Length: 166
Image (cartoon, rainbow, N blue to C red; front, side, top):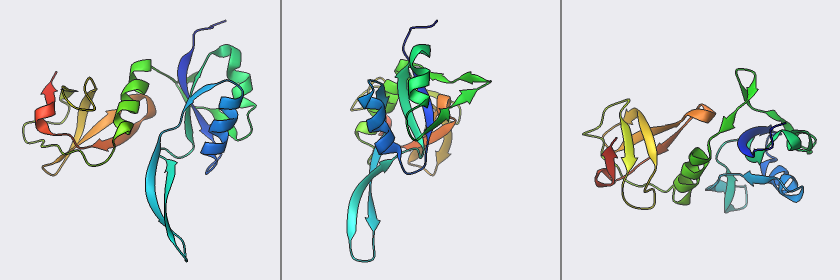
């Protein structure tokens, strides 16, 4: 049996990600739940709240020995699979994702010198060391970074002087 810990994605009951994350941590599973702050309005007030960046997804560091305990956790529905196998995510992609989430507030980028499909590396600033691929150019100031393991795209703006071509 494979005892090596790898990052996987579990699909959870909607709007229960934080509670499920706590349950998984209580049973000793390392988790990563990226949260973003957003302003929500109720009829009587406005409040900043943290919500999951990706609805119904939690990253778990696991091996075959603890699949069952994860699946038996209340609110966990299933592991995300690609080609009928549990989709594992390389550690460096989770690390890069954590770097992105440190400061997700409007970092500026000029994409005038970049083209779709071009590989980039961030050389300076909070995102130093992140590698990505330009999947789409949005106007003159945005590039879309693709995180392959999730089949999900995230928009990130970065100053052009902080980016080099790979």
